[in-house]
Length: 288
Image (cartoon, rainbow, N blue to C red; front, side, top):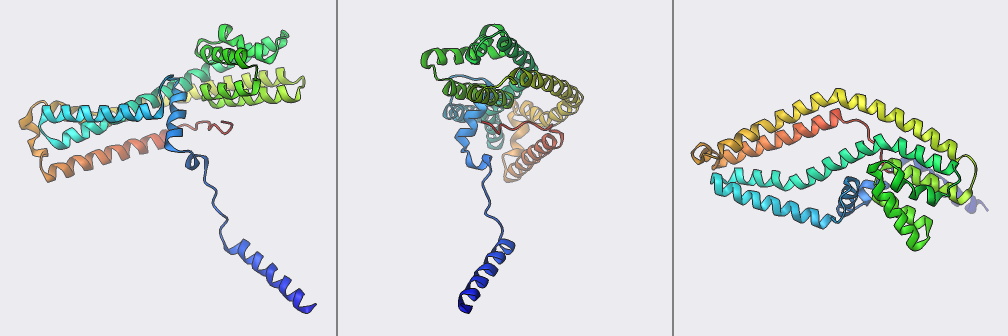
């Protein structure tokens, strides 16, 4: 009996030591779990670009970088300038998709309140949830008509409400759309009479959030645009100088490689630091 109690005491002390001394196992966050291809696919969906995959975007970026690099080498005759031009050109398609995703998210944030009000009106008029969602393809905001039209096509073809909601979330690729879809899914599954009140509350919240964010972005816009101009100005000047081969031959040396490389690195670091310091909090898609 004493040996058994001693063993239990030892096991208990060992478990307490492990709980206090050893760090808890680190769970990979959502960004780590998702692959690069998945993140690019979600970025393309958020930009509203149809018919493009992550592989296509990567291929276009590589082709643009190689083409512009060769063109820059032919014009300037200087390898460092050609490499930097190729890198900037290769990043161009990805930057364009990111810009389009930001613009689309801002556009959707402005029209979601009207869409939610329209949906609440349809439900109050006696429409079923699928019918209320489908009517947004004709009566809803223009920016949202295409995804809800696709939802109507899917629902008429399959009749599976949950599966069609999942496809709608993928096409919207928006945090507000995720919340709305999951709210409708729960209302469909458990029923209840509070859906209209929930939609009206959501509409009021979205309007207040959009108004506040618009004011902050307006005040921030001048500073961000000035910083972008300051980063781009040296490289525009270098591009103009590259038109005259004799003016840029000094960069076709090891010292020139170091100068251009250090300048590019400092510009990238400064630009990323500016974006991080001035970035407004963005809503994460926790219900994707």
